[in-house]
Length: 422
Image 1 (cartoon, rainbow, N blue to C red):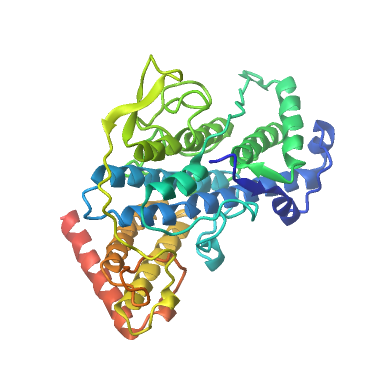
Image 2 (cartoon, rainbow, N blue to C red):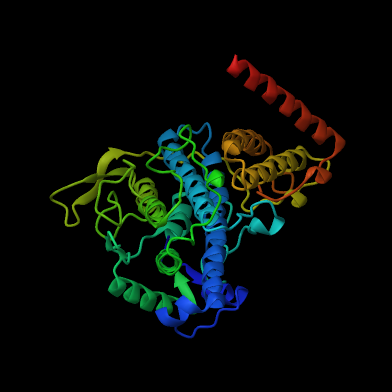
């Protein structure tokens, strides 16, 4: 994600009562309280990573929904591919948190950010992210800013049969101290802090930092390949997992298709997210071009945009619609299924990994009611259509009629699942 987006390091350090004085291997090896604070730093950081990865999904999905039935299928599929990978990154961050004994939290109201607003955990004066209809301007001024790569700091893990070299550990701890002393971090520095913290604590604890219940690891080949989503049980798998996030989100400063850590071909034939959005803005696929100064050019197959898009009023709110309107009723149902999705993901990441398929199934309900909203006029704004607001609600917020529709949908879904099994 972008170097223009700053992560609020002061707030994070205050949450765990960690001051900015430098650490050395001596006091870190003997001070159990300090060790616990670093572990808390890692757990808080990974919870923030989960919130950050999730926060990009509503704006991306909203833009994609507004392209439905507009014959802009190539653009829609490119945005959808980014959404799927953000879901993957959220799952990886949850696996990382579980691996070090943490517990992902996705089932609380404050997990959901306010739109328009800053990304979770970032400095307030940074980018403001809206829920808007698709436009190339939205991609260029918001989505590409979110995903803009920065020069990565490559961590070369020098492992031997006896473990990590002491000189490397000293250097890594020095770099970790520098990151902790900053008031704000770029997103790249934020993930770098997690990497360095894991390396240090793995060394100090002789691998015991990876104390999480292995049964909580989410691995599901139906949705994600084994190269992308795998069990995280040690330092090597943790660093590889973070590299998947960086590779898909940023690429590198020299090659949008190459893994950041070891210059191996990317596991994804598409370029990193920033370049995928840039393809849409430029109107052409990114391809290798030996005559171009960077070795790449937006000169591949065209990605046409015909100008058609659902005219959704920006930043819709459920409570903004009249309570007797279809827009309000469908917004309520959309938010109910969205909340159910978060609850299901919370269960998935806290000991029931097989629930991932149910969570992905709820994405279809979100799509159904999102598209229903976009087919309805906005009762407050003539000439516009309603849209999804991505708000956290419960059954208590539904009317009897809405609750009946939910029960009917659940019954139909249950029958369909039984038919598929047979």
